[in-house]
Image (cartoon, rainbow over all chains, first blue to last red; front, side):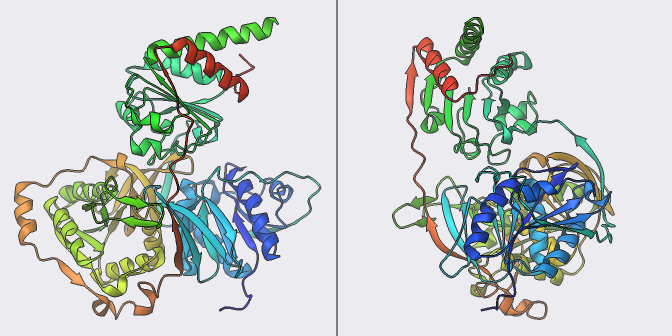
Length: 334
Length: 268
């Protein structure tokens, strides 16, 4: 076995336009538990503009924050550029554990980094712990979510991507102190791939919503969709969709919930006219409370629902909207 | 122009059984198929090949019976199939799999574009594509949802990454991973089925690749990650309260749920 050449837990803090992705705070929360057990330091790395407020990562528990700075090169998702800079840092600081959020970008970037470092990488972990031999146990679903595998790595750094919303965010404490280390970015660039533009900036993040009201092909038109949108608005939530509905073009792909769309875990998930294909269930079955409305009593969605309402969405949803509005009036006038 | 498509034979997930007590996966009753996302990768390659005259080679690592997947790829339009099969490849993790695929790609020699599905439905990691690109030291574009334009030198695609959709243009050599949205895979046609039946599938084992990669980097030996335990979790138990023919009762109870969860929007 190798000597303790590798030490510390490093969290990749993904940013876009200067905003740090919340999964980084979750990783710092979990990372702290791991670092305490290993009696080592908790570190974070941000690649981005010099103006990013990286102190936030100290408030969230990082003992050291590496800020690899550049005004331009980290403003587009270029895996080659990011990987080159991360590899350089990791070779230098030699962390024993290296965690990435399993975001679309994290899942695309981490394998490139692991390839160059010639180390193992475990995808989409839902839990992490330290074993008796002080190695990282990485728990992840596989076989289309049917099993959970417990995985360990033989070499260092032990790398994993971790799903968003699996852990609580680290508490924020402005009295925390930590070191911020600024590093100039390597700029060899990527001569082969050019990011031309961001073509959709639809600001929907259904993965972050507390309530998701999803529609299936029971919804026939944009007009019909209005009641779904109204219900979502009343509940402070976002509108989701089944794959089938997205294929009709009524809603865009960014609304899609499922195995090949967004995985969501809101407090409340309301499935309206969704039958519940396995690929849809894989994206929402971890939700807090699941409410399903469908006129087919044998719809598979009812098997995962806390509340199964057998009936016509065109009758029940307007009734629900009406009831919520009356309730709010009642509270207001009270 | 040469396009390499990475293909994996996977069990039909609808028929795989999971034994909760023994923590085992039983594939015996499940048939096999080409990983569904890989069919999109193959289709993307065929579309490009039709316009550019590119040669499409399907490459797969797997047991000897994975030859069937490569024949199917030819039946759908691929020009050739290469099977990487050896008992020594068993137990490969992401790193060992990516190392083997990269070695095979190097043995093929000249290539322009490598296309892979975004993930497999069994291993489910989505890491092998980008990792192969990392090992070959070529750029990659992941989660490609649509192909806007292509030539024999470059390709313009929409990549769903970083919580947005990005239009990217890549010059070859390049690897890309594709989602289900990129196209609708064609079915095998009669002429290609005949071709597939007669096709010679190239088979490479450890010794065929020894000049490119050392055995110690393959299979279990080359796999730093090890599965220590498999759990088959219980399907989540839900209260499952059913409302039939009484929408008003259901609606009132839902209101109660919303109140308790504090999600009623106070702003309205």
